[in-house]
Image (cartoon, rainbow, N blue to C red; front, side, top):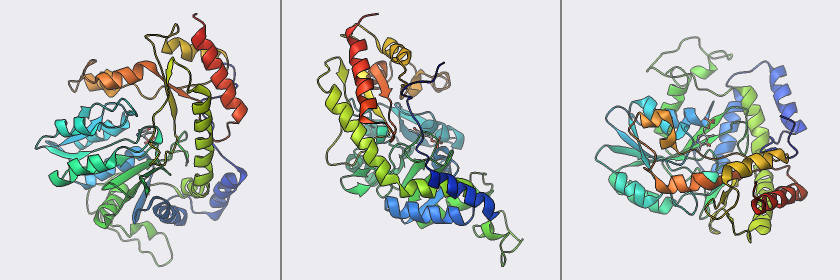
Length: 384
Ligand SMILES: *Cc1c(COP(=O)(O)O)cnc(C)c1O
């Protein structure tokens, strides 16, 4: 396909990002080392968490956290049906069962009432997803989870830089997983992190991240380091490289500026589209700080002469890239094998039916946003 005039996403990579990676290549230290340790320290300061473990994906951060909590066969973990598959796949890989629940119509975030109804004596944890960067109702979720001893692991793949009622995402639940995947708000190409106030959790995750080696084994190649190490349990290979962390540190230094750019774009979309009767715009709570990872509109398929799939196709014909977040988990083949089926989560299905994520990346100009909006309005007015 010809290059799009406005792609769905373009990473924000500047000369200083490139220089930081080149400098790391020249330093001779490529895998986890000083940049990873500094990145962890800087992330901890940014998200208000005392301990941060940098790993090679958000998926790994979620998985290692559940493992470190000894969640496994016979246990249940509650997950919204409206998320990316990784949120639930990690539960399956521990041997526990992901229990899907529906989301709220207003913001596609975990519905606290649905969470409460799904609790059984086997429920060990819940994984709220801050959809699009809008924080979940954490007070309600914690009020349900805490008295029952249910752990709260936030999937903040969309939400670095967000805040819930003045508290940064990363400082609220028992642990929080971030993603630095190529399309996320800040990127290391591939990467992720787990933030927590629980030092024992962070220590165990560090051991599990690198083969189950004693936690001081990272310095075994340093002067003064020792070749001797012990494997204390069967771990994984989920560490972040120093190359990636060098990029992550530059990206993190720009997080506020990148979030401001996303907010500017989101507010311009709102101003341009708020009177469009065939669209529902994303709801957001003024008391929170939204990370605006996505700007998702919903097409009213009942009233619109043009259906969602055709809107996407016709936007692409006009050089505008979009995406859909997400195909509800219970629509996928693998989840049907867990016993879920279409019809199970009506709110997720309604949201999905009309969902279009519009282009959203910090380098978008006001004219780009206006171009997307004019074309979207025009397409909605003209039946195929
Ligand atoms: C991107 C994403 C993930 C996975 O992140 P990786 O870093 O690619 O593992 C998990 N959950 C949600 C909601 C995501 O959007």
